[in-house]
Amino acid sequence: MAVIATPVGAHALDQQQVMAGAAVLYNERIAGLRAAQLLDNDTDFHARVQRIAQPLLAQAARDYPESAAWPWEVHTTTDPEEHAYAFAGGKLLVSGAHAAALNLSDGELAMVLAHEIAHAVLRHNLQEYEAALTLEPAWATRPFAELEHAVDHDGALMAKLAPLGKQQELEADREGLKLAARAGWAPQVLAGYFRKVVQASSAPNASGFAHPSPASRWRAARDAARQLGR
Image 1 (cartoon, rainbow, N blue to C red):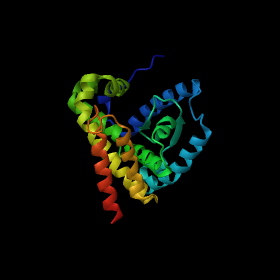
Image 2: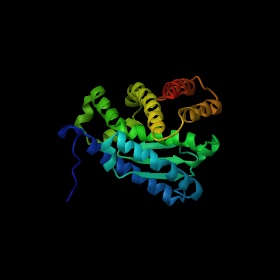
Image 3: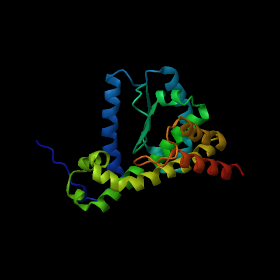
Image 4: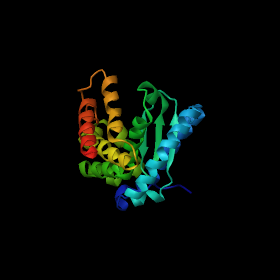
């Protein structure tokens, strides 16, 4: 029997739908990395990430009770093309190559993880899809999987969503730093991650397509750390 994809507009877009779609995309990426023998293959780095992640996830459960019931997954990869990603519903992927390139301390790596956790608990994926439907209502008549693909591959739609993306990156920086500080990390140590990003950048004052400039992120993180340290 043929499976008929439900148009987005057939029912209200909600977090559960977004989480279900994200799980499919995440599992596809994980399967590809596993097949290439690039998944969790640096055992020391993988154990380090798991150790750092657990107190952060426990803090997230306290701060955002909804997330306590999520089936969190935290995987690592040595693929140099990867960085760090969060999928709705608590699916994370962290690159050992990125951590090695910046020589991240445990506290700086905690900032990377907390930033990605913040994306998930703040429901940034859901917000992005809702914004896409507002900007281009025609997507409501098409299957949700097509909307998922469009927000990452349709250049015109991505350009419209870029300002939201920059706002979400700054919010994930700020709220991730706060979350990690509540979990016990020193705010100044956490903010140090952004200093290293600036130092490694060839154009620290230039904004990316949907990311603020490294220098602006470092200034914001430094200011947030000062406020928390008072």
